[in-house]
Length: 145
Image 1 (cartoon, rainbow, N blue to C red):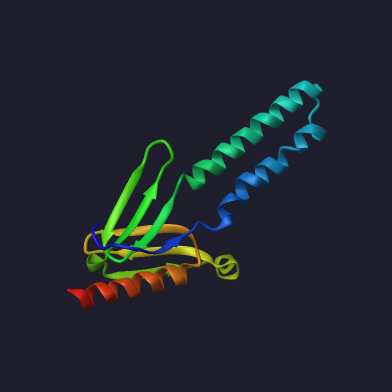
Image 2 (cartoon, one colour):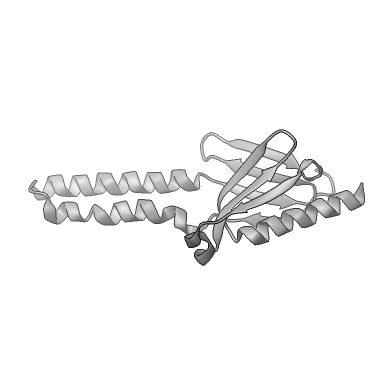
């Protein structure tokens, strides 16, 4: 949009890659526990590692959470793109959900409500900073109207 600037770009926390990395690491057990031949073991190991890699890429999925001076933008997808844009003046409330581990590692879920829907932004790194930035831009949008 005209005269619109990106104010903040939220990032996904690295915790989202924990499960795929754990599975890839556990796949090393295939080499030592399995009674198959070494060729079959290596093929299984590579197949599991490839699956874990694809899972990790899918989790990240090209996700992009951006706050501009006028909108809140959520984009997801690498091959097939899904985009959601919320006008800041339509946003009514922001809620943060954090588990104990999320508080320790500084990640969580940010929920943005509009009149009709609730939009969920999972595994956001520094969710308090993200929500503060959204609130600040909402206030700025109200002042300009």
